[in-house]
Length: 622
Image 1 (cartoon, rainbow, N blue to C red):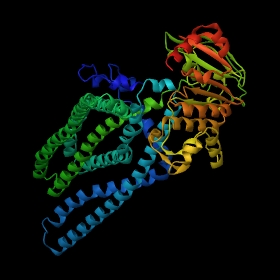
Image 2: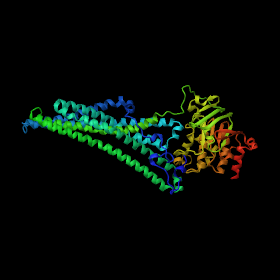
Image 3: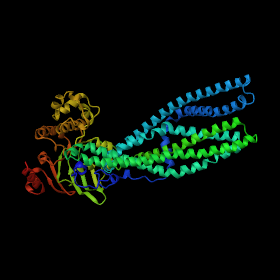
Image 4: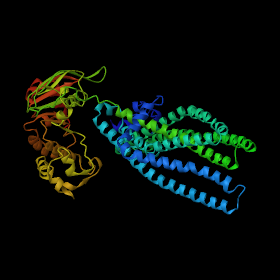
């Protein structure tokens, strides 16, 4: 991805950058993961989400259920005791010693019930939070583990920010569902069932009259749920685009400032931010409007309660105390109904995120071990490419019938103009992609018939854009072989000429490097990558423009290091700086996916063909 394409524009030139169609380069292209997910509510997916609680079901669920039942029973007992107190303690015998004693007893009982409800609530919340956080941990771990297995073509289609938002924002949005939502849903359902039973037991006529409003609430929630769900999906998509743009802008900040495009970039971000705000406002308005509609419907139920209840009192079918108890129960009835409405909204938000999470988890790696795959033994390095054809996109061939024989220990240089197929060949050797047709064998083993791990563990790659992780220099070198000792690390650093600059740094090998190694020069980063590769001791070594960004003095050091690094290994060297491949055993010249010349440097110079022309053209500019 070229940062210049996105940010290097004249501020006077009108661009077609539209936040609604934001892609990697900011042009009119929509990424697959940002498309609206138009699917019906997937109960199977919800079950799949809840299944993450299974490992903890035996440990804590029974205890939580017991605490939930105790809390619900104590809550539902209080209104009945209140009505009983009104009828018995505050009725005809109000003021007598017997009525006062009864009133005190009921008051103490109510107080104790509230204490029990408070204590059970504390422990229930504690244990549900524990389960919720463990579930989130497991889900995020599964997602991260899976995206590490996905093939390069998956990342080719998605910006880094879009992947990042799945692991962070989308997983975080499920926390409320697991820490409170599921248990609260059970509590509200049990409470509703208990209230219905009590209402019908007190007076079935009045109970049925009040409950008749429930279908109205169901109709409201059914009507609004699709619109609310789509609104939250839109919010997620727009937030994903903002994250993608932020990631790209931060990585390309040097280009932005170099071309003074801060204002243009800010305008584009402001547009995206405004789109996100509008989307959130719309979804939030729908979300907040759901509760009041439920409350208005509940108001009709209360109106029915007092209209019919007063008639029942006149006919002596109901006492004042029971009517007040009934009123309290009805109040408690609308409360869980309202919470269930809000819970459904929360569930819609969670489902929008879970759809995006499981979309990634269900993504199958294009590169995976076949059923009959076996570990490749220690590689010698004999490689054959037979009639290899490869397409990044259907109908656009990057390689067109490549045939190549490499003997173990040979150094092979791949030369050609940009887009000729050099990097494609090394990507296929490492099986980052699978060939469209033909075959690639290493020591007679088809790379598609061996396990990916056993293959890649014996191949070392040094890229032009060396990635340096946050941490110490020692840790970055040790990444090549995690069980390496400090002596091993220092030994390979000395071999590639990195030891001197490392020990000159304030912390030596324990110096903390900044993100992506920004505190190091390009040459220093490349030397660390060479040390990392040498530590891994690969049987096949790939150098992809590994010396392109290195000054002449550093290149001389690396040339010496390469003699050690390449010894006894099959190596592939991709280089535009042709002076670095003069001594390669075999040079392959590529053009538009075909091999047009091959041989050693001397033989190719005698031919005075394409290779000769490349050498001549390069030396004109020296």
